[in-house]
Length: 299
Image (cartoon, rainbow, N blue to C red; front, side):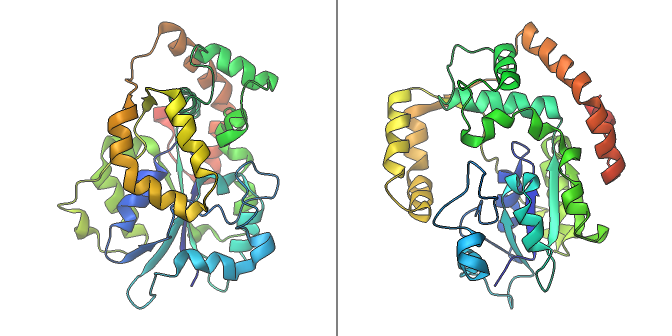
């Protein structure tokens, strides 16, 4: 029991929401956790010593899909957006007897970096006094004040999508790829997920009356002490147990310690975003060539 569809990128591009929307479809069975992270490279910061293909093989991967039945599910799905930047993931998936459908959602790189900055700030992973311009400067410098957690130190590199796609394009036929834009997902979620459903051979009418919930909204914690204590407690249990506990307690925790971070930007943040747009332009042009996507909106 292995996935026949993998949502393989990119982080901070709506993949949590898309996984949830697809997994809600009666013809889809999602992995027991959204991000199995099973096919990561050993040097990746999210690599799991107790759950990876290098030490546990494909039989270990199958455990994430124990609850799926190919007789009932047309699509067996997992979503680890960091796969885009790996070599292990395309190497392993390309050798399966049936190569999976590969879904990639790309977000305007400058906005992706800004979203990552806001996430890190809201989750007390970086100094809350750090502004966006200084954050970008420290990322460029490889400063230790920017953690490796969540690939924060790759906030810029991970927006150069065209640097990483060739490793996938070399291993799979073009018909296996499905490329989408986060901006379309955000603009009209229902139409977006119906289009994805059609690509995967699912009945799109399921979404006619579906109200797509939003995952991972921008937020910040009220008490960094409480947030860190919760993280420390999670280190002493398995990842599956941690995910279940988080799911059960998410509502209460959000009520007590999470608030909306808002979306207002300073004029300097707008200037930095414009500077990043110019920096990413050559990479975006290459991405358009590789994928056939119309990236006019990113300009």
